[in-house]
View 1 (cartoon, one colour):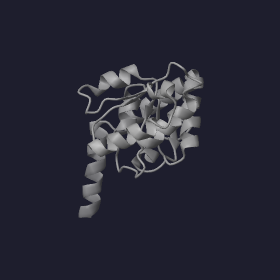
View 2 (spheres, one colour; view 1 turned 90 degrees about the horizontal axis):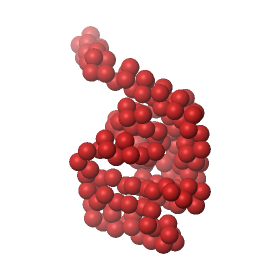
View 3 (cartoon, helix red, strand yellow; view 1 turned 180 degrees about the horizontal axis):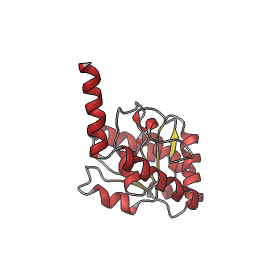
View 4 (cartoon, helix red, strand yellow; view 1 turned 30 degrees about the horizontal axis):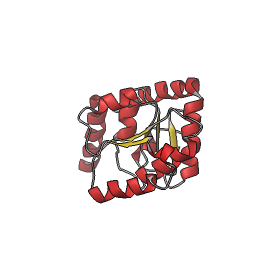
Length: 170
C-alpha cells in the first residue's frame, strides 16, 4: 500500500507544508523504482517531501518516536500485521486496513482508524483527521494502547493458545 500512501500524502501535502512522508523498509528494487515513479508524477516541491529508507531500519522505535502518524496500508490484509500494534504501544496514531486481524482489536473512531486501503480519498481524509484533531487522537491512542496491552500480553496469548489446543483435544 505504499503507492496509495504516497497518493494520499500528495492530496494533503499542501495543507501541511512541514509534513514529510518517510517510507521505512526494504523490499525489491523494482518496487522502490515503481514508488519513485509515482512520486515523480507530482510537482518537484512535493517530491522532495517523500523519503525512502531503501532498507530495513535497524531501530524502528526511533521511527515511531519521530513520527506523527503511521500508515499501515497493506492491500491484502495480514493475518496479524504488527505495525498497528507497535504503533499503539508507542502511542503513535495509525491508519490500518479495515481487514485482517486488526479489526478484532481496533474500532474506527474508538481506538484507531481503519480504512479501505485502495481508497486514496479515504486515506487522505483519515490523515487530515489525525493531523487536525490531536486531542481526540490522543484519546484514541490511549485506548488503543490499553487494548493492545490488555489483549496481547504474553500471558493472554498463551492462555488463548492453550484454549485452542484444549478445544482441539476435546
